[in-house]
Image 1: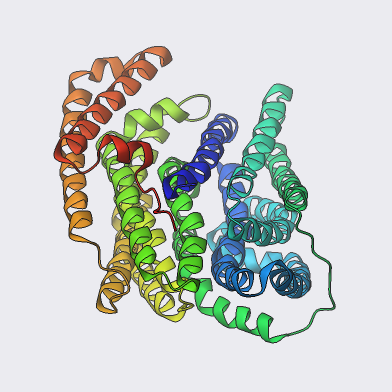
Image 2: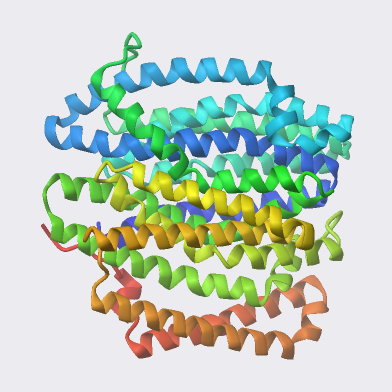
Length: 519
């Protein structure tokens, strides 16, 4: 399968999850609005989700995949299975200890890390503690899901691991539909959602266990031991913990500060959900596919293929994220209104969410480019350099949040996150260039410049259409839907027309932009 085919496989599955995520968020908005229960739920869910991104999808997978891929290349399936069993035994014990500790000390964790300002509202604080305790075992399930996903990805089986997150949105949507139909109170709805999160983690784990088994791969449980392979994994995980989870750390920092403003946490989550659509479809697809592909190319000593993979990934990522970012910046309010404005989600909530979306979108290309550049370090088992850059980015985010929040509220927090992401991208790119690990070809640089030009022209067209059709954007739901989709379609025609006419992309690239050469 071509590289673009692999991106499309993961991106298509992630698209399904993100679309259902919109359904979920719209239902949460209708049921809870931006009130105290929504704040409590999002704060509670962010905590185990942060650990999931840091330990599971971030540090663990970043360190595990290159080592597993090398075992697979060097010693075949038996060597890879032995390594995975050693890791599984240690991982399960560590997760059990962490979960028991976190659940027991949850009031202190909520009061110091999750949402310190909630302490001023005892009912909100207690609800956050309860929901975080219910959801924290979700981390245990998702860490094992991440390991099984890494095994499948290293075997070049991408789709199943990418599609199982759909279960979270399906289960939570069903919970919300049942709650709205039954007419239960917001607090009970929040608790139901917490149990739904845990149920989705169990379901995802079961699906992947079955999926790995269908691939003919099985693992046993060994006595936990700190073998040389496990020690190597832990050594690589330490720096990768910050590197892989820098975005989540930034969001947690924003959440802690935002807890001082009523409704701010919910507003940021509603905006981030929209921003996550292109980030998930493109960024996650690139990150999931590129790391094992680079690891195997480096293991085979094919430096030419390494450069090819990185060039094509850069073009693919920028070509799809830059126009999305421009669209979110130019017309955030019509998009937010169309997706969310119903029930408890008012016009004022739309305006506040739209402002945060525009600020998040300014960093959208950077979030995805981090996924393009970071594997260039991880595949070479260099976890420390990206770690230092991530720490710098976190420091920039904290400083920016503290400076901007008093003046711009929740929008300042979103802007600080975007600024820190661009700092991280610059540091990664410059270092790869100086090490001669990745220097974009002249053709790639030319295409990227044309992509930016086309995106800016598209942004101008979107602005003109938005102003011209303003009365239609205030009509009924059907009228607004048709108008917004029409404006987006016109912008897409302008953008793709320019990139095709200028040679930034051609028809073959649109059908298979980054087809791998045959070995």
